[in-house]
Image 1 (spheres, rainbow, N blue to C red):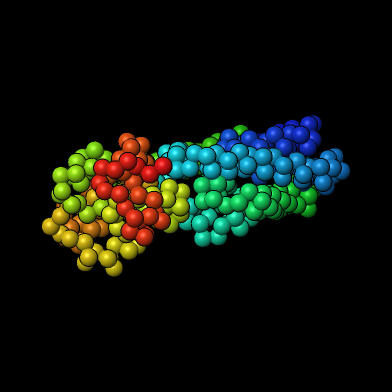
Image 2: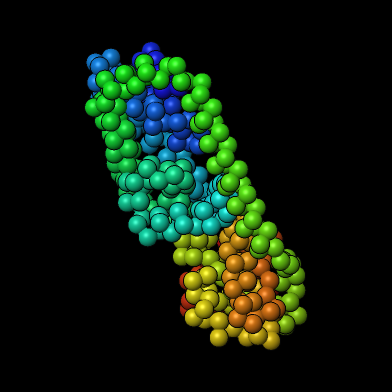
Amino acid sequence: MFEQTLEFVDRFGAPVVFVLVFLDQLGVPIPSPPMLLAFGALAGAGRIHPLLGLIAAVAGSLCADSAWFQLGRRKGSRVLGWLCRLSLEPDSCVSHTRDFVARRGARALLVAKFVPGLDTVGPPLAGMLGIRVPSFLFWSAAGALLWAGVYGGLGYLLGHDIERLLVASDRFDGLLLLVVAGLLAAYVASKLWARHRVLDSLRMARITPRELHALIVQGEQPVIIDARNRAAVAALPVIIEGALSVTLDEVEARQDGIPRERDVVIYCSCPNEVSAAQVALKLKRYGIERVRPLAGGIEAWAAQDLPVVPIAAAATGARPAAGAPSAA
């Protein structure tokens, strides 16, 4: 496989480096590291200009990242939900990545290319979190330069060794391909099984947005808990009126303040309500039995034009009455 990549890069030069990196960073399953190693090996052999190849790789990465960044800015939490659905991990997959970007800001993009999942998820998250365009472009380009420089540099330094390994491995190509394919299939199967087990363990009765709104209008006064983390709130900075912010890590410290005699509804921003269900299960362990996740989370509530409160307004106490129009 690497030998074919080497021949391909050798034949078309820097333009193919740009195209392959661009497609890889858009999410097309193209193995960029072997291609960058091939580019480095060819540069070391004098068969491709190292600077042109490096510029092509950085440009391809930056173009793809910019497309994701703009999509994140314009589509916001919809992009997050889509990425969660595509992932082999449970919904917490993107939550950890989102926290990483939220804590470090645009600087997270410097190492994003080396972290599985973060390379594609990082740019739209940067757009969702409101990172400024100049800062995004600088750190995204720096990260792409570091990424292409590391892999291309390895190919440059090890070019002669790579060629010897290719000659020695010709007889084992078929076996190697089968082993790699088997390991990949086993990895995907294990991730799918882990996702199924997590979702199955969290199955419980959901309450729909309309049902929750009816309880509020009828004066039942359910306890509403916003289980989103800081980065998720930044992506969609509204809450359901009167909701308490309690993340999974805060449940133990704050469970004493949650009434046992009232209905408790928990929402998050995950497509499968995984975070909300995890909080609900934890509350049940502390004796809070009347607890249910909100089906579809805050996005489903807002999509039905049910009332939400901007975070800033909630902090100052400027809240509309239940049933008022939702915030723009």
